Amino acid sequence: MELASLRTSLLSKLRKRRWLWITLGAILLLLVIVLFVLMRMTAFHHVRIDQSNEALGIQPVPAATMPADSSGGVPDASAAPDKLAFPNATAEDIPSGDQIRNIALFGLDRRSTKGSARSDVMMILTIDYAREKIKLTSLMRDLYVPIEGHGHAKLNAAYAYGGAPLAIKTINQNFGTDIRDYVTVDFFTMEKIINAVGGVDINVKPNEVDTLNMYMGDTSRIENKKAPLVEQGGLQTLNGMQAVAYARIRYVGNADFERTERQRTVLQAMVDRVKEEGVASIPELLIKTAPYVETTLTRSDMLSMAYRYFKSDKMTIEKNRYPRDGTWQAATTADGQWILDTDLEQIKQQIQDYIFRDTQDPL
Image 1 (spheres, rainbow, N blue to C red):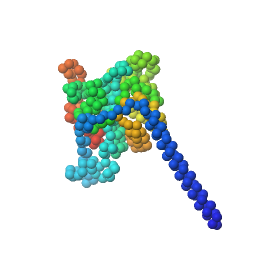
Image 2: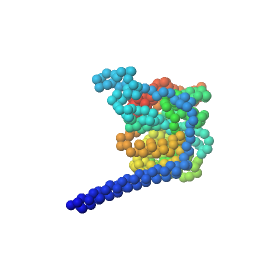
Image 3: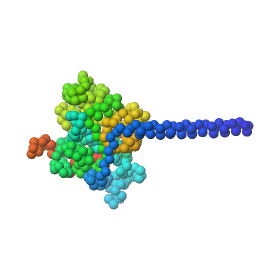
Image 4: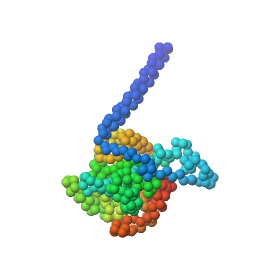
C-alpha cells in the first residue's frame, strides 16, 4: 500500500515538473521570437521628437463629462476630475495618459519617390483601452487654419512647411489634442504594406471603377510597372496598387469627404485582414512592413499595441471625420484657393468630446 502511494506521489511530481518545463519552454520560445523580431526590425525609420509639450502645442487634456448618477442627478462638480466620467469605476477603469493614446497618421501624396509633400491623409488614431475602442478620425485637408510661422493655410500644408513636428503642433493647437507620436507613409510605401498583409477586401462601387483605374495609371507610370485593372464593382480583394488608387478617388460621390471615408475603409480592412491571420502573424507582419514606415513609435510600442489589440475580443473600431456635415461652407481665399470655412472652436470642442469624453457619436 505504501509502495503504491509512493509511486503515485512520484508520478504526480514528475507530471508537475513536466508541465513546469513545458511552461518555461513556452516562455523562453516567446522571448526568442520577440528578440528575433526586435533584431529584424532594424530597418524601420524610427525618429524622435525632442520637444516639450508646449513646443508641440499640447494643452491640458479636457476634463471628463459629468454624466447623470443613478438617482438622475449630476455628480458634484468638486469631485475628482478623473472620476466624473466613470463615477463607479476603479482606478484601473479611468482613462488616463496610458489608457487613451492619440497618434497622428500622415499619408503623403508624392508625385515622385523623392522630395517633400503635403499630407493628403491626416488622421488621429485614438486607442481607448478604458472603453475598448479604436477611433479613426479624419481631418479634412482643406480646413483653413493658422499654422505657426506661416499665417493661415490649408491644414495639409503644415507637413510640407515643417514636416511631422509642425503638422502635429498645428493639429494640437487648433483642435486641443495631446499628440506626440506619429506614423508617416507615402502612397508608394502604403502599396507595399497592403501587399504585405495580403491585400484588403473592399466593396468597390460600380461608379468608382473607372476613376480607380485612372489613378492606377498614374502610379504605374511613376513606378514603371503594369497596373492590374479592376474589371468591375463589388466586394473583392484589392492589392496594394489597387487599394491605394481606391483611397485616392476624389471626384466620385461626395468629393473629398467621401475620399476620407475610403481612406478609413482601407485602414479598417487592413486591420481586419491582420486579425483574421491571428496574433501569431504580428511578428512577421512587423518585419515585412517596418522598412516602409517613418514613426516615433518604438519597436516595443508597436508590439505592445498590436498584441494588446489583437488579444481583445471586445475592441471595436469607430470612424469619424471633421468637420461634420452642416458645420462648414465652401469658400475661397484671396488668392483663389478653395477652402472649408468653419468655426474652429466648435470643431475643437467636437473633437475633444469625441476623443476624450466619448460623448459624440461616430459617423
